Amino acid sequence: MKKMIIYMPKLSVGGMEKALINLLNFSTLTNHYQIELFLGYVVQKEYLDMVPKEVKIKLCCKGKWDLFGKISTYFKMQFKLLKNLLNIDKYDIAISYAYQHPILAKLARNSSKNNIIFVHNNLKLKYSSKSKRLRKMKFEKFNKVICVSNDALKAFNELYPNYNGKITVINNMLDGESIEKKSLEEIEFNYKKPVFIVVARCEEKSKKLSRIINASNELKKQGYTFSVVMVGDGEDYQMYKNLITELNLQDTVFLLGKKINPYPYIKNSSALVLSSAYEGYGIVIDEARILNIPVISTDVADAKEILNQGYGIICNNSEEGVYTGMKQFLDKGYIVQKKFDYQKFNSDINNKLENFFEE
Image (cartoon, rainbow, N blue to C red):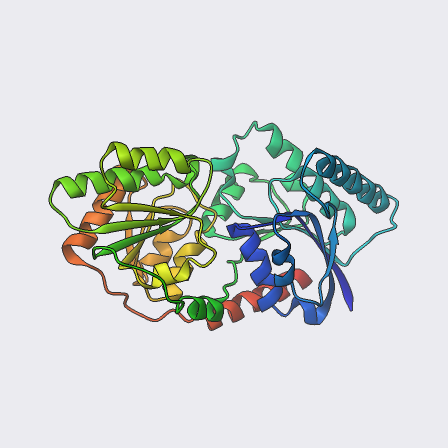
């Protein structure tokens, strides 16, 4: 069998990490390749159990991610880089699954001539054209590039108009069966309907959850009765909690924090709201589609292309846009127009991956 190595900085709760786990579990890559997963660290050990047993895991930091762990990981990565430069380690395919880690990007390029980087976001929104981090990544030196959305592809082409490698769009795979099963878990869900569900990291720069809170304040003033249930944690959790209190929305907006299983909350809601200023793809949209829940989303990544197929309401990328989308749903509702076939979705992705790897 051919050898493949995948470089990833960490495993934890996150869209990129979830996408990698799904890729390893639902593609047929393990049938064709001996796969080594090179990791910096793991936040919780149970994430390692999600990786297929056929995949060999090389974990740099096996203890705490403290100063010692970071220093140890840095030197292990440098040693790996030296081995690659000396042709001791070579692979048929080398993948940098992270698009923001210069050392892992360099490791991937030096591990195989067939080197690939996954781009999970709109690079123009993440970096300026003169960004030091962007220069260090050296995207233009990769043999192949996989963008997870059409939006990411468009931005990449604008930043690198003379890129002469192979580039394509391949969406993230989905664990639809598990999502459906987990959504059946019994939970207390006694909120005033209709219920808007928000599943996102509490991080204002990209997720812009303040848009939803402020829109809820305006709608409540107009006499609408509804609930907003927010699932997620992050650096701006307290800021959002303070804003809810300041606007006296404790009976309307409920900040639940992190939930290991968010799917029953999505399943029992009326609509999912995505208020982001930018997204790589917005995998929560597909999770809502699996559970047949309509989506209200700002015009980010491929949201418009997806929702215009009959899955929800697209709105302007602004606070006013989020308000308008939520108001439209409260006034008229929304019925999903067709069932999302996640099995065919995964199959199409798998075929595209296999063909692109071997080109």
